[in-house]
Length: 384
Length: 95
Image (cartoon, rainbow over all chains, first blue to last red; front, side, top):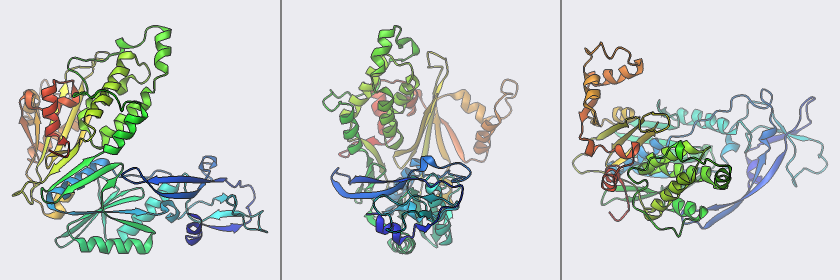
């Protein structure tokens, strides 16, 4: 229950509403949390504010908040595979309740928990609440100030990566909203940081990291490799699009298959037919897989997402083909392998390519790159 | 970020090797004297030239057959696709 946490963090004061202001509503949200195996781990109830009724300039100003790039996470994981680093994960409980608010925001008293005898009063919020527009930003700022106070440096490239160096001991911290990965070459300083963080925020220490952003992390200390995969995610999306009984294929897109606007529906009936297909959400599911662990379908996803608004039968067939490809390779993921003898050496290797005006509609070229580190891709792009 | 890790942790890092299969691009990037036909190169691409001059990046010609990124820009044969996938480190656990 988040109720006692709201109270513990002193999220608000009960006050009279100041003239000319409108209190925003709130709502209880109930949720089931699952673990890596898909089993229910816990049930929670959360008080959320109805942030959509907030007014710009009165209830909120700046709302941008950065999140870590998946590339940073992959990069650190690959380094960690090669150098025997420790990777531990911490989760922040009631993340947004830690952020301090800059604006004055009034909220109605929560449903079912109004203080008797003071029903006409409203809550003046002190802490950011879930679903307030500025909550993520306030949390990020709070965390940023705190972690920099501990002597950490923020990476210039990714503002959610922090690091600290003490002689030959190094520690990296990646912040993904409320998930944190601590990567370091010394268990002691990770523990120390954990204690410091716990004293400030309400944390849940999860030990060695094995599941982040829907990616499963499997390490083999003896073979010195790290395997990053999304098995569970593939199962879920195959089920969602009824593809779990499909016939697996080996390649996502066949040679010579060139999709173009010509394959788009010509008649009204064809268009009608295709409008019932969940094309956009299917491509979206594929894209998440591509962004996290599957550079091998980057080209397929790139091509498919060009036909969001004018898809024909052939495009949909190709989407299904990519799902069938996933079905055959659902246990595939990125594997990083440290090489003995190269203990302090980073071997980055990049590849570039462009196809010469391969797009049949606009005659534009597609370019792509892959950067490899320790035998696995860390960064890739395929772009028209 | 790689540079930051390298600096702070004292790792050794050679030049980043980039493989590309177009020789003309590689020559252009290396040779600044080529000015008549290449006058209108966007300023941002001169960054690449600077990096090459400082020996931070090494451009290497690679056979088209061995360019991993082909799988990201066009549909390729299954053998090539498997090969590219392996180089990118995408594999099942048992391997």
